[in-house]
Image (cartoon, rainbow, N blue to C red):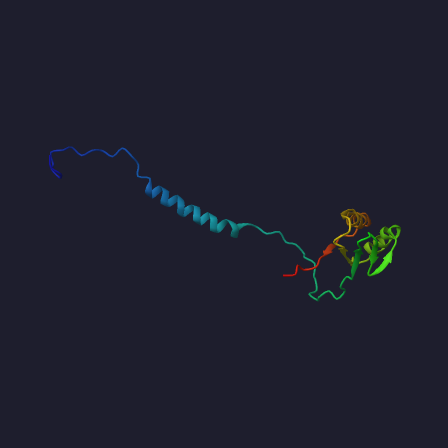
Length: 137
């Protein structure tokens, strides 16, 4: 049997060619992806006006130090442990709230630093940082 001879009956194609159908569907999908966000209706909202001036009031920083014996120092002034919570509450009530920087001696028991952190949390201080010395090379 040779190709192209007229002796063979033509076979009927039973399958649908899916390639043009897929191409049309992809084009429609792209069109819908592009046009749907444009057709979405927006809600009219009257937004408040704001100024773009920088904030001049910078919060102060409180340095709470704990020495090797476990004594507390408020900005380098020694304080009693009983006065720590009332002083922290007074500072937490300020607006803007000052930052609390805790400096702990490397030989102090961790318990004393944890007590200072707990007192700051009870007083409502939200900004707490730790001061460390950089490692010498």
